[in-house]
Amino acid sequence: MIDRYALPELRELFGEERKLQLWLQIELLAAEALNQAGVIPDSDWERIRSALGDGSVDVERAHEIERESQHDVLAFLRSVTERLGPEGRWLHYGLTSSDVLDTATAVTLRDATMVVEGELARLAEVARRLALQHRDTPMVGRSHGIHAEPITFGFKAAGWYAEITRDQDRLARVRDQIGVGKLSGAVGSHANVSAEAERFVCEGLGLQPDPAPTQVVSRDRHADLLTAIAILGGTLERIATEIRHLQRTEVAEAFEPFGAGQQGSSAMPHKRNPVLAERVTGLARLLRGDALVALENMALWHERDISHSSAERFVFERSLGVAAYATRTLATILDGLEVDPDRMARNLELLDGMVYSEALLLAMVAKGADRQEAYRLVQATAARAAGRAGSFREELLGDERVAEWLSQEEIEQAMDLRHHLAGIAATYRALGLDEVPG
Image (cartoon, rainbow, N blue to C red; front, side):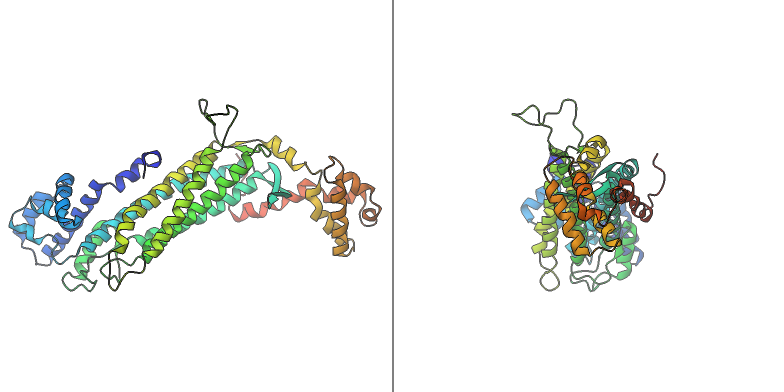
């Protein structure tokens, strides 16, 4: 992650020092399990624990050895055993590099996912607040970018809230899926390290043992995580794109926050651009790309090759980091969103009631009109009124063919805003949002 978008807590989680500390913790737990099994003598275990029990690692020394050995786990082990005597031979006993790597990765991904979940909880709460606050703020609903039928801004936010809660459910599920470790040896068969030792280490880290690993934890788990994160990115992009549309000059119904000293354009002082929402849109593209990498990493040769390793050094930190940052950014946008109810109301009336065309159609059908005939009649009336402000109602009331089916009172009933908004209560009830706004 570049500094511009890095969250300090995630930078720490994926940092080199914490990684090596996790490796050491795994090695110490494995040695403790072997001591309990009678493999490592008590005296050797005590010396190991005494020398390494503080959990400290010499990152620079490990990197120095790696430049020579070209193997990060062996370099780490050499840097640690330099602090030991003959008892150092017990470290990594019966293990392979992936036992340490994949188990440590599981801890990191689990903890990083929890950071994203924390940001997502804030976003959910902000979307929930908007849904309640603007439950009765009318605006026009649009399909294909064209005025369709009336909704409220709260109804739109309720849809965001519903999708965000599904993202929360997905992340909770994949966090459990990714929270597995393995200490089962070179091909996963427990030939030189017992399942009991594996279970002891995993329990010490808050993980479950992978029930059927190869030399590695199967990469479908990692693909599941990064795919769920990509779907989260789709949610963030959907909401951010909506904010961008609502902020357009011709629409001007809602605006992302704009600081007192903020500048929108290097050339045009009047500009107030939706730069944060555009940033979220761009970051969502990275999340989809990283999900593809995770899917590509699923197919490894036999019990394992190393083709996944180099890619994972990028995509895990980037995907979790981008997801956390983008989620936090969108929550900031929605938390400070400037909503203009008056502009929403004016835009709703731009077509002088054409947004009630379906209700007019159905009112005619209910009175006995043929549906296709009624459709063509309302469509022709709208076409005649197009481009002439205040003329749709006039055309309806002045059309003898319309009068054959609907009275003036029935036309006004069909064009009643309250009728069109009453049904959104079902969505609020379904989402548990049917409380009175505060």
